[in-house]
View 1 (tube, rainbow, N blue to C red):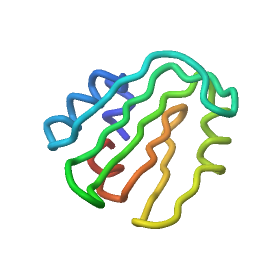
View 2 (view 1 turned 90 degrees about the vertical axis):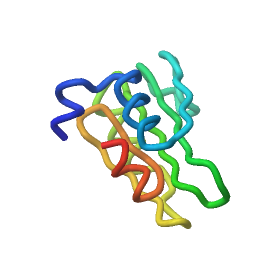
View 3 (view 1 turned 180 degrees about the vertical axis):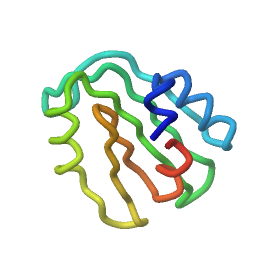
View 4 (view 1 turned 45 degrees about the horizontal axis):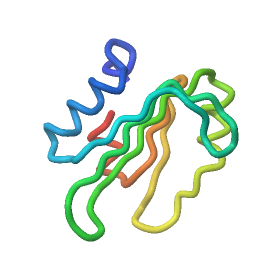
Length: 100
């Protein structure tokens, strides 16, 4: 939680995940499939079949983040979603832990 409040940006999240062995892709501002405004997004995955992965999305407002949090599917491979303010972490349990 403290990390996100101090330095929560695409570069810091990407750096943290790369150090943990993830391959990362960063995306700039835009809209998601539901029209929610996104400031940035990081998609990260470790190599291998059924490997850990996480998507960290910074929404422009809390309402969009809450909507995403409540609608994202959390089935199979123990997928989880956690939200800290306008930032949502979605992925495997370990992936979310590594990103937070």
